[in-house]
Length: 338
Image (tube, rainbow, N blue to C red):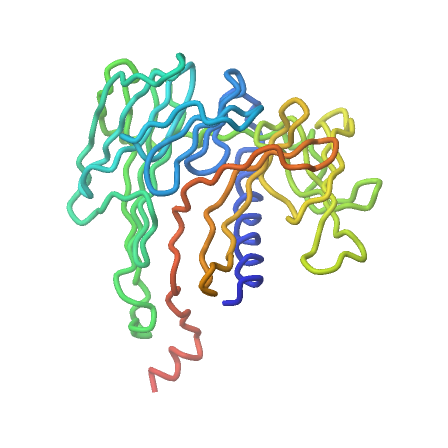
């Protein structure tokens, strides 16, 4: 796939996911610590972002300046954050979920405890998605502690090897866990877990997605903390790569916050003081030898008054990068059956 097409494809996938996330959690109230993207948490109270680094490790970043405050190489992915604590996943073995709780209230992180859970046989724990399997771990709110939910999806056969009468080519397994935040003790739960920890504005406070603003721009979705919403439109007459005008307004009051030009149709975002902090999907970039490399996704801060970049940090791309299995159409299956 050509670079431009792949970039647009990645953006569309991100937008579909963002729309679903906004709809699914539309009734939750804003909080000061929240999940921004998978593996990226924002702590508005302390003015920090906790993000998984490309390769390995977790980094704390100052939201105002973009300065790296500390790095912790023993863990790989933030799972939950609240009250000066950060729960992170650590890859030790494919048969175990390994977690580390950090005290992040001071200048440097301090480990509080470690815990682990052995998954059933045949399940493989990972952080990055594979070509044929995906492991997912998420935090959820539970009374008296923290809920965890893991899922494992495996394609049992390549899609082109599936016989017409064999529809069950995928296997999904998973379980819900309860975590005691004081001791780190994990136990299985027979009940379904609650909603993932992500915030969004109440649906009544945000104009309907797809509707138009007074300026004729299309409403996209609410910010990660639910306090603002984004509408955008194509900049007319732009040459080369398309550019878009972002119109950001406060939910409820409709107060204008920013009107800036960006190279993205939209992005998962939050407003902090005079900054708009938003997500940038993975992009294809040319290297010195003429080949193409995939640049990891980024968290980027721009000035609300001008759109000028203030800082940018890459974070780990956990999506599978490579040739995807070809899809099998009904016509393909019919031809094989003959």
